[in-house]
Image (cartoon, rainbow, N blue to C red; front, side, top):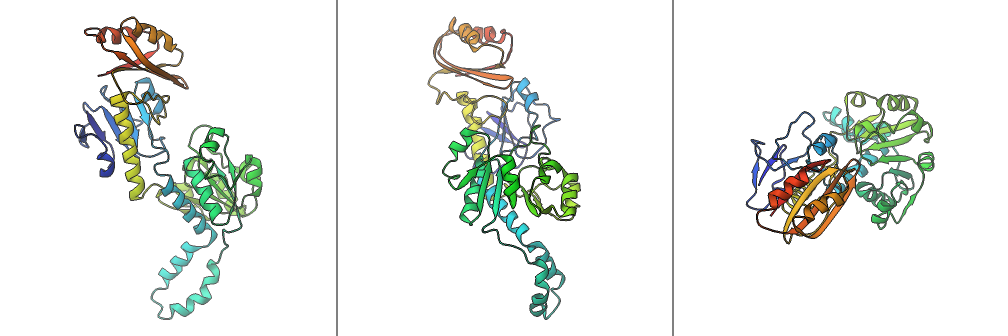
Length: 386
């Protein structure tokens, strides 16, 4: 098996791959899988040999998910692997907004030639004074892997935490971290929060969600923290809110030309997952996902195909990627006419579905079965594992 790395991938993570797997940074030809971090793939045509792409990170807006789904390429991400790193940066971003630490450091740099700086700074420091975060209300939009960690850390720092999370499953999964967080509506949160931290993926429903209408409901002097994606915030509306004082500070880990040149913005150069630990964790998780899919047909943490987990493979398996409208019973019937099926699982995610079948091998009929399944309308890709 060959894995092509589009970006530099942590060696710790690559060690997870079995020894017989070839890792290449030179050529994607004949690759079975691709590992990527932030490299843009929208204009990239994959060779037919590629069956999966694993993003060593959570965000996948650098990958054409639907295009690859149509080609039968499963795309994975690594949710939670970098969550602690982003949590720690988010807390640091809040502290940078609470006090003008950046301005204070710049003052020291500008006055480092003053032999009496230790005295002159006592007069200057008043310009950089701020507030404490203890006792303030933090609103968190999105209480998933990162948001729940931020909520837990903030409550331990003495903050009152309000969470906005529509998924009951997510709340239940993170209930221990959210035990001191009150789950409320968006309207209730935005009216009460002194700080608002956003932790949701970028998609059509969330693009520009922090806009003029949203900010109009907020407290005067609210602080907005964005360690998720830049396009979640409407830059023009944020500029107006900062100029009017509606927003005291906007701290972002995703600056663009507009935000980087706006007064009141504290911009950081996308450091959220840039820790040794996070890069190791993400790479290791991505490698495990690749191996599990290639060797067992299991689909864990895919963003364009459903979750399928039949556990370790005991016999031969067939992985069928297909359109959701194709009834899996048609696939099972076709395979069952030629093989003895031990177990199977089917899942649907949006317009796409996957069916994985474990069966008893019979000599000479494997290719016949694959051809028969491929002929079914709505089948995108069929792969045998033996």
